[in-house]
Length: 189
Ligand code: GNR
Ligand code: NI
Image 1 (spheres, rainbow, N blue to C red):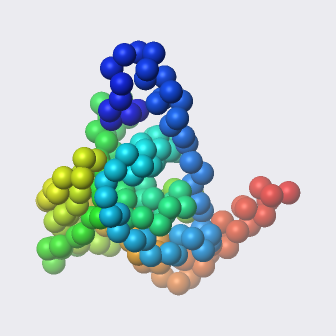
Image 2: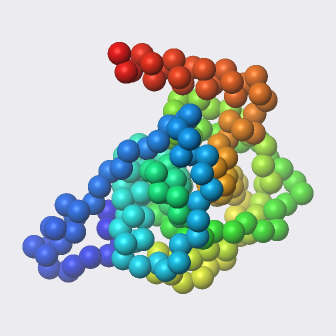
């Protein structure tokens, strides 16, 4: 879905066909460990990347995606927390920063498209404030709680090269990585 486009039907075609589902990197790909750098200008190139990220996330399916998960080390996150059957509610975060994290924390069972098929409880601050640029490059501030707070903090970790498994015990993390590597060996045969 394009968030903007030509109004005449014929003219919209090339735009739609230009959208791309990108490959999602999976652990232990070293690119997932890179620290992403800030976006300088929210221009059409950045918006095209965000559109691709959104499509890639919907197809997966997932509720969030950081640019580094498609191999682009820029501080960009897309999210959509709408449930199945609900109207889509795409959110775009460029150069997000998190502040005022609550003392109170919550446990949430997290998954990650870059750590497919594993779900584990992670403890994070229950609430936080997120400052970012939106799809149009305009500054925004959001008070987040619940799943939104969990998801944005999970995505902020990606921008620093951190995966949710890094927040588990070493035993759990290594067990998951071992299973993923085994899965990848089998898939390569
Ligand atoms: O699709 C996703 N679900 C999810 C569930 C709980 C906490 C975080 C997430 S994000 C994840 C998609 C993803 O990997 N984003 O980086
Ligand atoms: Ni993730």
